[in-house]
Image (cartoon, rainbow over all chains, first blue to last red):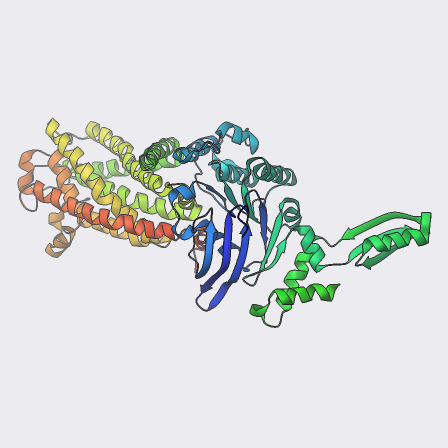
Length: 315
Length: 284
């Protein structure tokens, strides 16, 4: 690594996890850098949860090297804990408390770990406004709707002004409006506060919107690592071109859409209207990647070469 | 600011907050009232029961003895249920995600379960003193003894409740592993009727456990000196009572932190999910 390159916030090398004779993680390697938003995708049982729980320090690995904020999570201290935020699924705790009470209380835990750059905890009243719980701030948590409860979970996850936040399916159960607000908040955290974010989701549209980088985990391995665009280019190299000419709708798939369109105009001239060029979406990419993995002859044996082949076949 | 001291103070505030919320909760208010009514009705119903040559009325015997049973019940079952339920609803996992959160959580639990005894004592003692003659301690020194034994009960029993909560797999099992033994032990230790009415071997077993000694200690505070002659050993055996309770406290304080941290280590998002699904499945 070059000297001037900053230390990654998360560095995972050849991570392995074995339960009995089953390899849940089979040599996972990746980095996450400061201020990056990384989305972890993968079918159920692919090892997403296991990976995240190892990074959070909640699970001991079988083999490999893991560093989170420069420390091995397995032996990390309470000071390290103070620098990390967590938003998990299905929390039902503190039913009798109110959001305002709980956020003030949980904020107190972070007081000794305040730094100049990150004054801990956050201003709770501002946070309540930011997550949109002003009206429910003094209501019993038990009476919150599913969506309001999720917003509270998000607020709790960031009340300690963390440098790194893990979100586990944060928008499950949110309505489109709340979902949009959550996306805006993630952008704020990453762009203005240089917070590093690792997020799992099943919503590919959301992954495309949020992620600087997408990791696809299948069969205990990283089968893809790149921006949504890069992944789409790598796997599904064809774009779909649609246009109308002479009152008729035409569809054509091509690897070089620019050249095709240039030709189209040269040939058809002014007759061409309603032109639309669509690159493969993340959903197409994801489906293709997971399908390739699942139909591979030896599930455990799939490797980068096989994926490159998968890409070639498609083009 | 020392982070450990800070976490301790946060835990104290947490316990106090939880107590206030419990006092305001209709669910908990009903629990206290039903318990108090049960105790008072039991004493009133049996108010003329034959107490042999003790020179005591039944309520005089029963009030301190039942209090001992109820204190044991609250201090063992309270934290046991709290711990298992809060493992399922994510409170414990939340604590684990906070810096020094498990320390604050544990302090909060101790404070909350200790303070929970106050409303129980008030709601039982005040009506008892009004309804029955001679049940209140005659002298101030009696109150000192009562306070002392309640404190001993706290340090002897709370750790046992925490151990139980940490080792049982789920809230349903607290009933089997906790409720049954505690209720049977309380009854055989003289909480509802004098232990002298039971067989010798039962008396022997009961005296290994803290309930009998807490009951004896509380009676020594509530009852006049001469009532000691009628006790199983003809004396209040204060030193021995204190010793047995301290012994249980020492055992609990050695074991509780270990099982608690072992349990906390296992908490994770997927473990909670699993516990939650198990909790929804009563028939297996």
